[in-house]
Length: 426
Ligand code: GUN
Ligand code: FE
Image 1 (cartoon, rainbow, N blue to C red):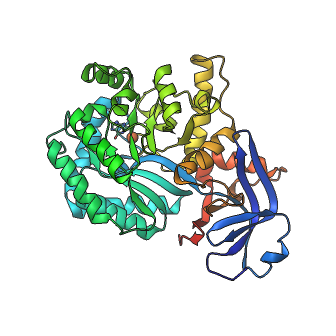
Image 2 (tube, helix red, strand yellow):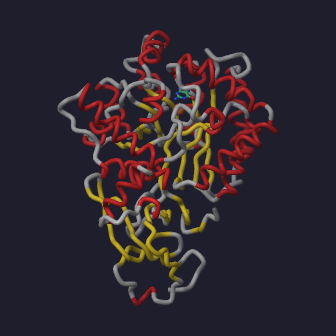
Image 3 (cartoon, rainbow, N blue to C red):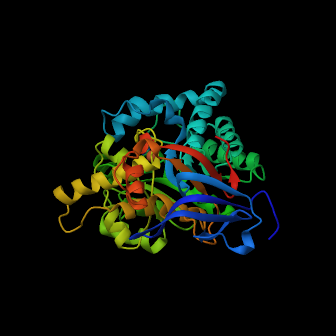
């Protein structure tokens, strides 16, 4: 094997998800990165890799990079506050006024710089990100993300109805701006990709959705949006689209519900028919438990979705979600699933730690390809976590240390990070 920059080994305590029920935990093991992909995890370094440089991570814990399937970069300013309203009032009172500021590129540069800095410092290596309607600010966000070394999808938001005058687009302008945006970034990045982003049904006319559906087909672009988040929102969609059998059908009609790879955030209030359509169309669910709690949206049936074989990963949904940490979201997913078990659905037990870890790694990572594990063949996204603040005289297994990292992530530090085999300097 030739010695290359993207070929090396890490030595440390290695954890990765095998499936939703099992986590591999190997103490003092090696994980080999060969040309940007994992060549496997080993107790002893195989002879064929003996010439590789080995970085000794000491007693740290090495996990796959985490995927945030849905977040809003411009809402970073509002994180950790303004969570006293439900979705529709929250959008009008706090969120739309903040997003309006991104017409000013100077403001956008400062605000997006802070968002990208925080994303880079944490355990997330992949993310699907909403920008705003503004093209120059969106391109600047993409430039900054590309510089960060993370792998991301980014969407210029489309919204042509039921939105404040500072944000609402004319339908033709929304399409023209989206086309201009795609032209401007064509061929510009290796780690940053565009994603069509109709905000949600209440803010997009049928005409806009039809055009976006054509663009998705024509350019084979992935799609991201919101689905069945809040009861008042779902009722409003019924009024706006009386012809639609479900909220999801209002996207599906225009080819925006799995015709190309598609992420739908929330999915708290999906009727069975909507879940079935998501399964049939291969739509990925971005489970956002922290956001759903903060906006009193409800508790999504994440465990049922996993068990039914739907594609599901985790999302911070900043700033409805208060934290940019997917470890925190794993902890919240487990916590709210216990309330669902107690109060809503006695027959479905809560999520386990293994299931939450699976959703935050392979579950979301799969949207990006072979991503989210350290097993041989996966793209080498790895995070080295120092959990020494959580160590106690008691004996702990590596599995217990991982559980504690998930639930007490604020006491852990990311000390090294790799994306596609390249080190991200923190
Ligand atoms: N639905 C439409 N826009 C938004 C948003 O910005 N955040 C959340 N949580 N839901 C939405
Ligand atoms: Fe959202």
